Image (cartoon, rainbow, N blue to C red; front, side, top):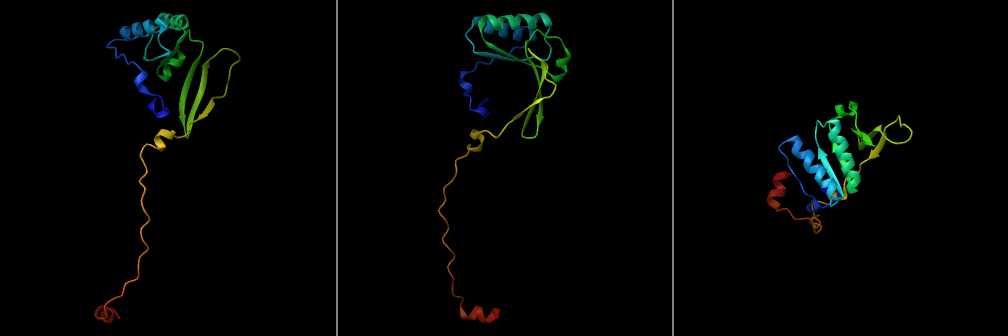
Length: 147
């Protein structure tokens, strides 16, 4: 997130030792209405837990992002929007697995240019231009030895 210039000091990270703990913490954060968004990384989530999280996000008016492996795209989900992301040169392809409205057969390419933060991460060092080399005289003894 810092890559995009988002200050990580406004984030709370809740490492949970068990999946059930992570799901409970995410649901409570969503229901409380005190978070703008909840991001959750879980490889396996049951359909009933997904439904509870979706309802909690709606009641707390928070954004809920669940990140799962690509294979989870085959599983059923109550989420109104499901996306699959694939890296491409200079960006990502976004495939709409599920969405409201008409189906979209073609992926959407999102170009990702380098972050201005990364481009300017190191301060440039101002250097004075080197003085032009000045011709020097060669001592006669050396000049005669070279000739």
